Length: 269
Image (cartoon, rainbow, N blue to C red; front, side, top):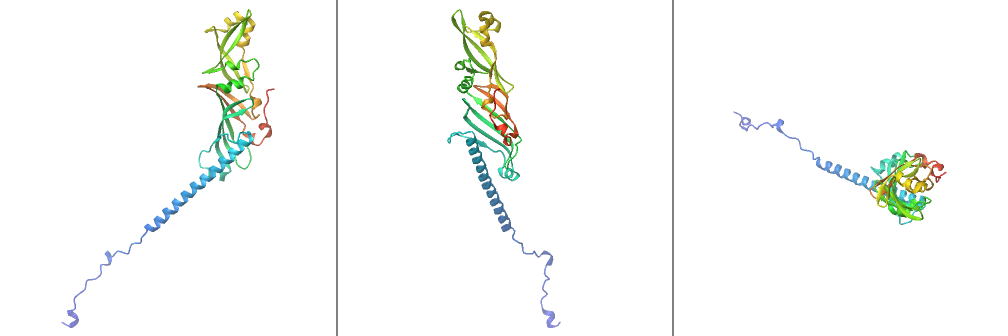
């Protein structure tokens, strides 16, 4: 055996089981997560700024157009994300609400909801409004009706009540009436449904038999024209008593944003 044959035999490398060095991927994942978080934060920050800007502009316009006091509370709600709506150029929906808004000779709590409001001009899709009147506010409105005893009015669901003094042989006799409100041709109409005489309910014929033609003062429908207090583009569609308030609902023509005639004050002609 030669000298070379005395060298120990070395095992061959196990190539099949040798693992390649692992690449560390977690730093990239962390970096990506940080970027995503920053983008989300930036989005919400921009969204908050955009929402605040739109709300501020709307409040200023409402305050200016309605000549409201500087300290008037005006609530503005914008559903959904604002930035996509601004990019499209149309606000999907906006609700504006304020209490004790002066309308002509009375005041009411007003809520307006508009859809498809264009930012750069044009007609909106449409809008609705509600005007809610408490008892004192309703009395102020009904005081505009000649001969109506507005000071005696009380809200008693499902209608309102009032009391009138009828004269019989020189004696003043109070007659109470329950009235149901309705919307007729854009006006509020109060229709008697029952009468009270001496604390007891009586029918219309009994009152006519006792007071004659004088009874028609109580038994008539009372019409309240409110068109003179509103833009021509707003139409009364419904009125009802809800709890201790009277609620009037209106449809608003979407072209009111572009047609001056629809923004002009209506009339009772």
